[in-house]
Image 1 (tube, rainbow, N blue to C red):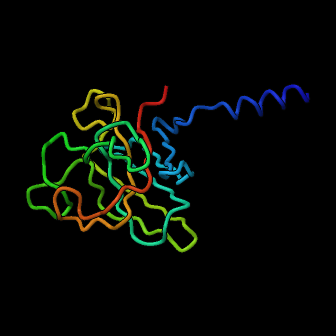
Image 2 (image 1 turned 180 degrees about the vertical axis):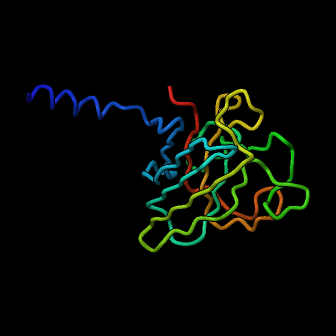
Length: 174
């Protein structure tokens, strides 16, 4: 019995970073120093993609969260993630009359003084279907980024959201 418990404990430690919840994917977010910054879970729903973000170890305040075009999160500035995911070549911001990037999310996340925060997004303009033009798995995947400031929801190309402070690579679970 002890051998079985030990084997189970070792196997749990070797699970991949991305688990597959109910047909979705969970992504670990890290700060530029490699500290755990929480998770983002992407779950398909009827005609929508549900994104649940749980943040920790981040500065208090309002923070923008965006989907970026490349599945790379090289510290310290995460610039390798590229710009916002934008397959439809639109402008930035949910309030932009010309339409918004696919990587724009409809609200900011509030992080409390204890460094934690969460948000629930339901969007119709992103997909987990690798064959779809709006798939977050397109071209090898994308990334999810937390910025140092709030998104003003209108200023192109980034919403004046400031530097990138946490990042997670989005790829299909294997």
